[in-house]
View 1 (cartoon, one colour):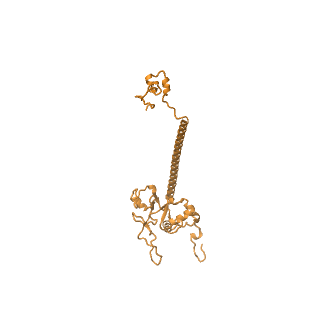
View 2 (tube, one colour):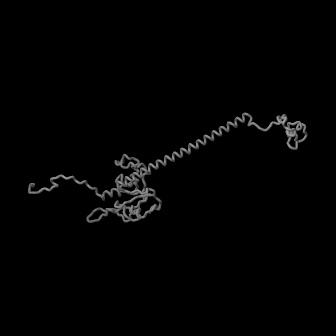
View 3 (cartoon, one colour):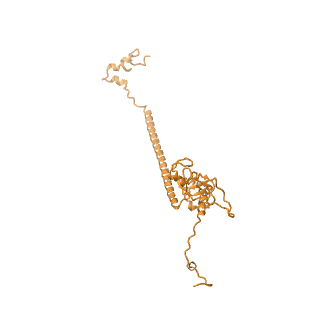
Length: 282
C-alpha cells in the first residue's frame, strides 16, 4: 500500500491520536508569580505587600482594588481581601548583584534565574526555585532553608519574636494555599469570638454600673423622703424623759426629782445647783 510517488505513510498520518496537553513554561510561570503583581500582572515594585495566602501585590494596585473592585476582572479570585488589615507590607533584602536584564542580541547570556531580592541568612535568590516565607508579625521575608536550619522563635532579620502560625509560605502549592486558607478562616473566627466576648464584657460592666447607680439613687431618694417626713413632723422623736412626768412619777425618789428644774426645791432655789446648772440663776 502506497501513495502517489511510492511513499509509505506512517501510523501517525493515518491514525488520529489524542494530542498531549500543552505544558506551561515553568520559567514564565515562576516569573509571573515572583516578579509580577498577582492582581494587575505588572512588575513588582516597592512597597510590596502579601496576603495570608502568600500572594504578592503592589501596594498601589491593592489600594485601587480595595477602593473599586469593579475595575478588575479577577475580583472573584481575591474575595479574601477586605481591607489593609488582611495584608502585610514585606521587608525584603535587596540583591546587590542584581542587574537589569539586557536585550537578547547575538550570543549574549541572560540569567533568567536572577532576582532582585535574596534571603538575608543564606543568601539564595527569591526567584521561585527555592521556597520563601514571610513572618506575619513583622513582615520579614526569609527562605524556608533558613527557617529550618536555624530553628528559633526569634526573627533572624529584625530580632522580634514569632510563632509557627505567623509563618506564611509565599506562592505555595495548592495544598499549602488550602492550609493557609483554613488557618486564615480559623484566625478570623477567633478574632470575631474575641470581639464578641469583649463587647459582652463591656455591656455587662455598663449594666452593673447602671444597676449600682439606680440602687444608689433609690437609697438617696428614700433617705430624702425620711428626712423630709421628720422635718414635717418636728424632727425625730426625743427619747429623753420629760421632767414633768418625772415629778409626777411616784416611783422616783425625791433626791432624783430635785436634780431637775421642775422640782419645787429648784423653783425656790436662790443660786445655781452644785450638780446641775440652773439657767434661771446666772
